[in-house]
Length: 273
Image 1: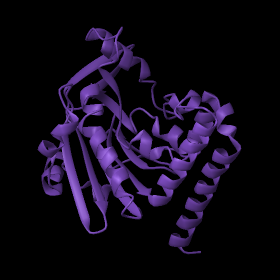
Image 2: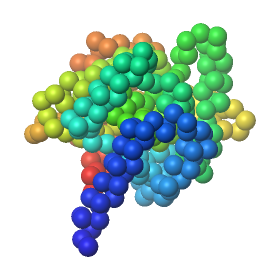
Image 3: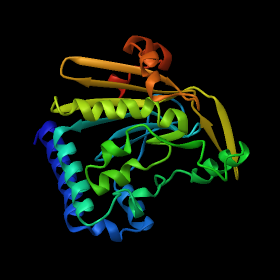
């Protein structure tokens, strides 16, 4: 059996696994222990990208996280037209049941990858230190591969809610500003293209917060590259409370400039192979 054929079979099994949960709604009865057992089926491995970098490949995306800084260095996924069709179908099914939101229960919970420390309390500590603990949080879990793009099945949505490997500390302004612009833009493009290749991640250090011996770094920038057809778009987005949706044109970058900033080529570090 060739390596290529083996890879296709593995992908098919993963797709069928996710679909089975989507159709019979077993995911609604899942507990945190079930999620941990699911995640454990995809063990992490040491990455050669950096001394504290660890790679996690799962059915939804590939990710390299810095386990000292506690943010994703590079995350890669392929978003397809079929994903959007499944996503819209799932949303419609929930709406027909009178549910306004799909993102509830286990789908709205954050889960850490087995073997990695629980950084979730550090986020609460960060907001407490900046006086935002009793308001809508200023520092939030910032998805690199967007939850809305991963919500084509419940299991895929669960895989998206992972600190370190798919989320870092992000200011809410940037989260609902330039970051969400790139996500909306991607959903618009999938109407015209069969698939979109997406790379994203964090770089730099803006601040650090510590809780019970665990320190999480607030990245200075979030970045993203998308490829579709013969087109490539790239953004380097400052992680700032003052970022806005309409500031995206100021955040356009070239891939070469981004590579110079990161000191690696994301498209070569993680890809479909």
